[in-house]
Structure formats: structure tokens, C-alpha cells
Image: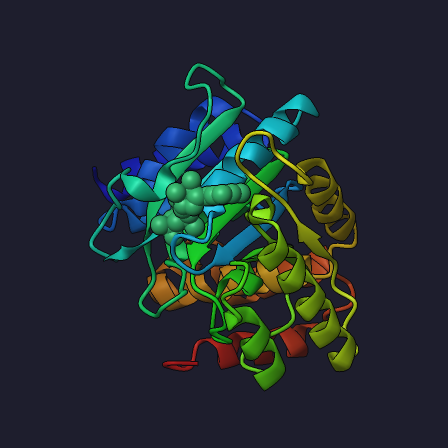
Length: 312
Ligand SMILES: Nc1nc2c(ncn2[C@@H]2O[C@H](COP(=O)(O)OP(=O)(O)OP(=O)(O)O)[C@@H](O)[C@H]2O)c(=O)[nH]1
Ligand SMILES: [Mg+2]
């Protein structure tokens, strides 16, 4: 594909997503993940803009039960009539171009359901890191899906990117592991928006984990909700968790950060050439300032520069 052709394709896919056309999702993701179609990706991001859907980051250690939990949440969201996209970030596939749709995406769903889209994506460079394509994909998909989930592995890495890409971050905690508790107490882990103790069917360890987390949060003066759920049948607490996530999402404090993160990533990845596809740095900053009157242009430039420092 030549640059011009890729740009046309990206603009078309972005416009379809912006119009709520969910059938554009697979092709849009293919384009965003194609490293040789940068102009196309830029045009897509620009045409799609910032979607109104709720972007939720679900993170936790390997094997804690994130995918099983998502299967249960998916069922709950679908019963509420919400369209859902899931981006499962594969930590074993670092920027090698396209994660294999393998074990990471063991999320049960009806493959014929057009209102569900599930995709495995390559991870970014750092542990818990997101590839710029994932961030861009979440933002673009939020136009056509009511809920967009980014599932990542990791807990306690304060450098995790998911907080910058999502409106709401939920950390899933293994009963009796104590990891999250120690990370919270030590200040290694930022207090997430929602804490989820899973495997409630294990009984006492799950209850204890919930109590310990509540106590730790209280000591930190934080009031993040802690929910205990069981994601295997018969499920428990799933509706309450969906409610807690939605309640947090209604106060979209993070949207501002999300938008800024997406732009900064984009600049970092695509350089000035990619930025020109958005109409240049000035135009991009002006657009951001228009979206959010609490951010003035000097502040945006400052944040943009800071995010684009190497390793910053
Ligand atoms: N008893 C019980 N087991 C669970 C529950 N949720 C998940 N599991 C089990 O935990 C194991 C791991 O679940 P996954 O959902 O694959 O975990 P994950 O966090 O997505 O794993 P990775 O994607 O590999 O990091 C599986 O054997 C699940 O059946 C639960 O609520 N109760
Ligand atoms: Mg998983």
C-alpha cells in the first residue's frame, strides 16, 4: 500500500468507527498494527477522534483470573445491551508485529455476536507497558463500542501505562497472595480506581484479602471500592462490579490524561511526519485544548514535551 492509499483507507475506517460502525473494527486494528502503514494509522486516529465509550483497564498478575472475569463481565454487559471490545495485551509478544490470538484471549463469548470484538495485541517495551497501537485502538474503538477493555498483565509497576490509556483502572487481586497489599503499603502501586478480589468461591482467603485491602486503603486515606467476586459458575458479585466500574466511569477524570497520552505516544511513534497527518503539532495541541477547556496550550505543550523524553 502506498502512503496515499493507506491514508485514504485509514480515513475511511476512522470515519466508519466515528459513525459507530462496529464492522470496521477488525480492519481498523489490522491497519493500526501494520508498522509499514504509518500514514494510514495516523489518518485513522485523526478521523476517528476520541470516542465516548468507557475505556477500562483490567490488570493483575498472570493467572489471577482476568480473562475468566472478563467472560463473566462480558455476559453482564451484554445483558445490559452494551457493545463491548476487549484488547488483550500479550506480554510475550513485544512489538514483533501482531500478537497471536492465543491463550491470553481465553474469553468466552458468542462468536456470532456482532456487538462483541476481542483482539489480542502485542505489548509495549516495558513490563506492563502498552504498545502505542493499543492506546490508539482503544481510543478509536471507544467511538463504536460502549465499553472498551484493555487487559494487561502486571501488578504494582507504578510505570504501568494502562492508567494513562483508560478512564477507569481495576486491579485484580489473588486471594492470599498479599502482593497487591504489600505494593499498596509500600507505595509501589498507585491506588487503582477499583480493586477486585477474585475467586471468592475459595472462601476464607478471599474474605481475608478483602479485609486486608480495605484496611490498607483506609490507612492510606483512599476510598477505592474493593469488590469480591467469583467469575466461575455460579458467579458472584459480577453485577455489583459492573456497577462500580460504571459509577467510576461517570466521573471521567482520566479522559484528559487519556487523550494527552494518546497524542504524545503518537508523536513519539510517528515523529513529526505522523503529526503532520494530524495537521501539525500546533493543530493537534489546539484541538486538545478545545476538547478540554481546563487545559491551556502552554500546559499541553509542556506535558507533551515531558512525555516525549526518552524513557520518560
Ligand atoms: N476457583 C476459581 N477459579 C478461577 C476463578 N477465576 C478464574 N479462575 C481460574 O484461574 C485460572 C486462570 O484464569 P485466567 O482467567 O486465564 O487468568 P488470567 O489472569 O487471564 O491469566 P493470564 O491471561 O495468563 O495472565 C483458570 O484456571 C481459571 O479457571 C474464580 O473465580 N474461581
Ligand atoms: Mg488472560
